[in-house]
Figure 1 (cartoon, rainbow, N blue to C red):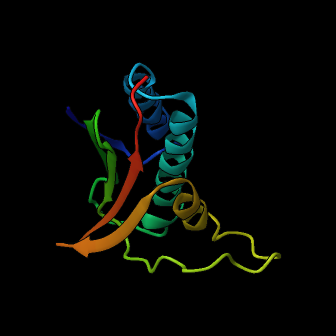
Figure 2 (figure 1 turned 120 degrees about the vertical axis):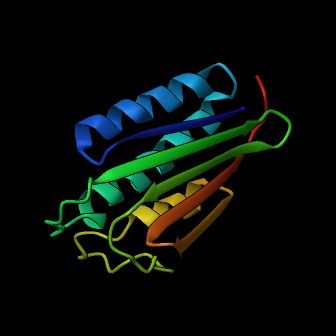
Length: 134
């Protein structure tokens, strides 16, 4: 099964898309997997809303796209795409007094795979979680 959801990169609208994704998954996966996916998706989307379009005053729409692919025997692939500024994902947990920088670290801890790439002026955050059907 594949789903593509796209919305404006605002906290309110992104939260609605996350709720929609979680509603789809709720009937298919165990609660602990669901919890990890929600944390990772929320962190990735929050990063887009907070950082990707920061200072962007161009006429371009500030969009975010979430692509969800579910294979009941293998797992869940999530891809979060935006057209904002490129970034370099941190490899380690930031200093204890840092105000930000923990989102990618958290995603790496709760998901089985994480990958970032920049393709054709778009940021792609890819995440994978093994899944056991209920």
